[in-house]
Length: 234
Length: 234
DNA sequence: TGCGCCACCTTACGATGTATGGCTACCTTA
DNA sequence: TAAGGTAGCCATACATCGTAAGGTGGCGCA
Image (cartoon, rainbow over the protein chains, first blue to last red):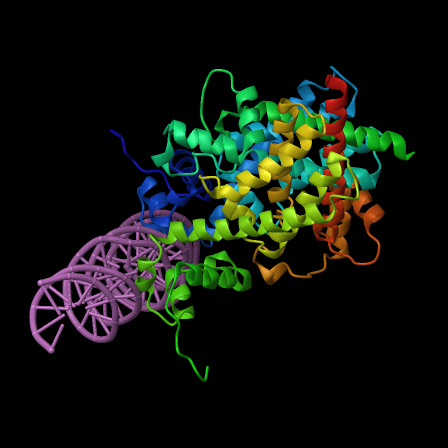
């Protein structure tokens, strides 16, 4: 703060500021004025570097997916020698992309809401597709796999009904024994499942789930299924 | 319009109005003033029936998931005699729930963003879980299956990068031959896939996909995978 | 020296959610 | 029947949002 010589505003600096606000305080906190003050500038000055807010959001998406592409190709290259099963390649890429999404929890919803497909996404599709085709999967099956994979990477990072979606009121309220009993009566299977799955920590919502393990399990299921489909169709 | 005796406002009528606005013009069009004028009333009057806008959105979610629950139990009951494979039961329910989501395209994103889990969702989980357990799936695997299924139903209905997410500018613009060639060079596998999959209609985005078929395929993959997991773990 | 442009700013408009307080018509109760 | 409360609706106002329109200062180049 001592030498607060402010640097010139650029599109990149705007996006960076917006990104850090989104990461720290959530996407709704990203307003033009907020981003501007972060850059020690007035709101209207931003319009010299980006067309409008929608373009700013497009820029955010662009940045996140570029990061996802980077990470997943890096991870895939690093692991390329360890296996020649196409599933491992795709798995590595998917896990890396997911990791990026988890670092920017606002991103999946934003990406899903956009209408134009970023180049970086196209590149990721291409890489995954290439792995599948080289692994002997048909175009048809690979196409379906692509949809399923992108849906998984974007969907599993969002966690519906998680208390991180605002409303800290419910944070750690315990259900009364009465309510627990009533719940158990109305949803016996669910209760039994929770009882079976619950080890140490208690939380009546689905927050007790280990969503990373669940993601990996489902990913494995999907990849094995695609592989099997490929093997039986020829 | 002749006998425009306006009925008294109720929570139900508020939600119904909001719902039809969302269906017709999208979720952003649902503002307090807009809903109010629909009911021939001023915005502030709504607050006598609904705590605030967030509660209104909760109400919308509540309505949609209730509808999904209705449809999926109805469908499951109707088909209950045709098969005793748990997968068919779960499939029927999932497809019915998806159908409801497709009727309210704004719903999946809204549902995903909420923090409290509606009772109707809990009921759907219970029914699906029951089918799985009775089919011999372990609690652990069933739990993972539940996550995967809900992610699919919510995720596949959203279609990232679809032109229905605003921006009608791109609607049906043809790529120049130049661009097509450049694209083919940069993304050879993708181009080959599009060529292989494309039958009659042309559209360079992923809009040419039949997402219903893709959903059913992936659903089948998932169910078979869960079934296989259940069969090998005991 | 002067012209023009570019980055930034000021002001202002219409939209949004909602706090505050007033009005009217009814219902309850003595 | 008169008094008082209350439920439902409305008008006004405020903060915040995206952004259109136009002003201002300093720099580069003629």
